Length: 165
Image 1 (cartoon, rainbow, N blue to C red):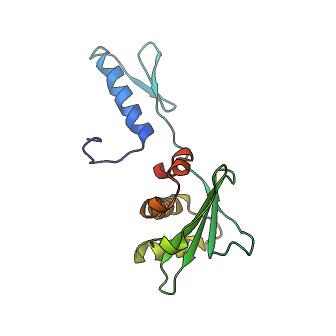
Image 2: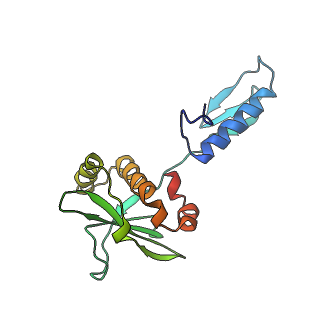
Image 3: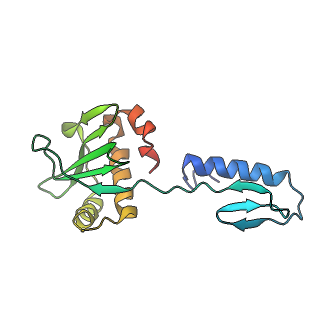
């Protein structure tokens, strides 16, 4: 099901599923499986496998020097990554710049593609809350990165696992 594209879980979950199915296939059909604390155990309490818990990247609002102009700034991964967003006169949100520790600043404002009208509206609504709703912001950042990934250093995206948000 995962390989056919019906679902699109992260690489970690795909690997977990493959390993779990492989381990279960080697067990007796009547073996009791115990689930506890995100782990699966056999009836003798031997660990079969632990579910990888993706804590998710936590975003925070920040500011930048006046020389780095944008309407909104987000940081993540303890300040190792920053993402700058602009809003057009039509209220479309554009990811215009990223910076990564070890890579530098990637400015692609002229080539940026916007979020959809609906996603832009949601982004603006939720970025202006005092506290960020992480699931919503994470989803919108993922979309912005995905539609602009040809403008961003792929090595940096892979290293910081931003394609797997």
